Amino acid sequence: MKTLYVLRHARAKFSDYGDKNRPLSYDGELEAHKLGKELKARKVNFNHIITSTAKRALQTTDIICHEIANGVAIEFNDNFYTCTTGEAIEILNKTNENIDSLLVVGHNPQWSNLVNVLSGNDRVYLDTCNFVALNFDYNWQQLQPNCCTIDYIILPRYI
Image (cartoon, rainbow, N blue to C red):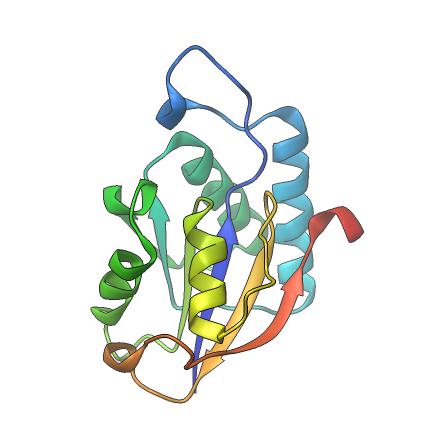
């Protein structure tokens, strides 16, 4: 069984630096630390991370990695900033088969759409720093619409 963890970046500031360069807000930093501590308490472990290169996604990834402290490899993907759901699935299809659990960090509406398409659901909306665990019984090349089940969702505001 493979597990795909989908994380929308934490809350960002509005800024004049352009959308891609928006940093996390103070509240965003707090929610990312809260989520990271929850993931550590649940013993959630990923073999690999792919993150968007937008500043808020990078900062979210850094905080999660700091809290979990498992030294996992991080891959930076510029396409995760603006990709469609289909393009995200194509990227995920190229994941090394030795990776059993993968965390992807990105943006809406792509990430909410990705979770809904992969799970055959149409009701999931990822607010900032929401985390979803999806399971599937195939290899990464076979990841496609309707092949995943939602194992759980973590909403930091309720932790």
